[in-house]
Picture (cartoon, rainbow, N blue to C red):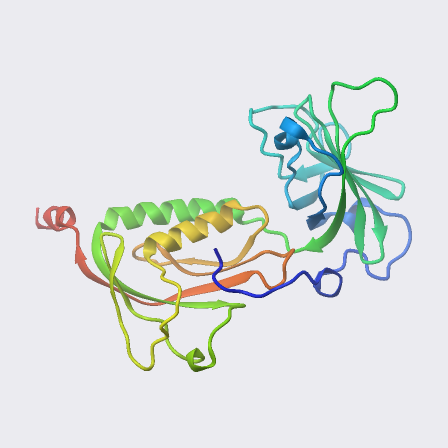
Length: 292
């Protein structure tokens, strides 16, 4: 949940262009990069096969050659069973069409796109190895692709977050105080503008008190160390989000500052910074270990 926000899709005016005013045939250097996909509903039900055609909404069209032609496409579809079908996922160019292909060997998913002004536009097609008689009419969904920022550090950030969580657990802190600044496209009352978020006292993972006063904002997100870890892990694990700032506390390992955004929705972003943190008491087991 991103608290109370207002926002709407402003794709054509705010999304970075892929080609701009350039003309001529499509080619790999021109098209390669990262894109967010805006997808309509399928024109007919996929029934129980939808999980095999739920392609990511953020994709990277790499310039690295794929095993069986075309170029490397990432990430893969999260199929319910592991697969190692060679040559996919991949993307390729055929004349004026860009194609993205995923398959587990039984249920191919194809996206065919053409250049329309400053973006790519076309459709996704959910196919199957069970080909019906006659001319098959596979389910389709309209797709638009807009160039966006690439996020190559996702796995590195996830690994750092896991290491930070281990450092936090090892510290064994039982009680602490924390104040976190939150910057987002949020709605605040006029009298709340410019006020500070409360200083929280957290014991055994639960908030036991929060500061009050004229300078403290009454309505404010309640962020503990546990919720900071959960929020960062969620955004880093969601291919629709990118994280542009990611800093951990050097001593205790919790997320100290980070900024995440969903490129497909310009107003869906959040910035978080812990500007005050103090240990009230470590756990008894930690105290015991230090005394020994």
